[in-house]
Length: 237
Ligand code: TMP
Ligand code: ASP
Image (cartoon, rainbow, N blue to C red):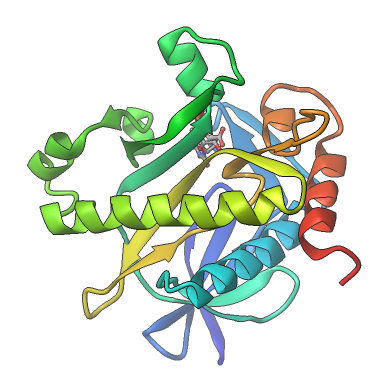
């Protein structure tokens, strides 16, 4: 497959056209942003870790019946994926209070929920990704009722699968964000990435943060956290 022109550059990835209109190539960058793009930096080696980890997790989910955009890893930073139109919803699942859940509702981080929570944000940087509910998403025609129901069920299933997968690696999956996309024929698939940029991972024994919160909160040890997560997923592979 041939790489063609740059279609889109986001905060952490670039997307290139290919010679086949059904597929694009994503290229993962080391760039990192936080606080709505106000804080900028770079995390050495992040692009390669996020590419490889996302692909491993998407393959695992695919084997469990979750349709994903993943096609084929090309190189340490580049992957062929199905071309989709991203549904402008950030789908956030939480198992333990942290981040905006803790600040928004005035609770400490670390509260373990009896049931996972699921929330939607409107993916719109100009509006700072406001929180919204089903009826708002419907009113804004971001997705249909059937699509929203399917996305919710799929995200909760992804949570069950990933929670168990990471616990086997002594990692608590605190929360994460998913994005879904629609292919040209209207099929919904899991898209974007699943990485320490988009998940909170805490060591199950020590509680140590092994994700992008170390960058967001200037905690230091950022690269070390990403490479530790890579070790937990890939071991010596
Ligand atoms: P939050 O507590 O800041 O709402 O984040 C919840 C989860 O979603 C956390 O694992 C980080 C992830 N996330 C993103 O991937 N992108 C974003 O823009 C935000 C705000 C959160
Ligand atoms: N990457 C997002 C931003 O720049 C948010 C985050 O991951 O904290 O706003």
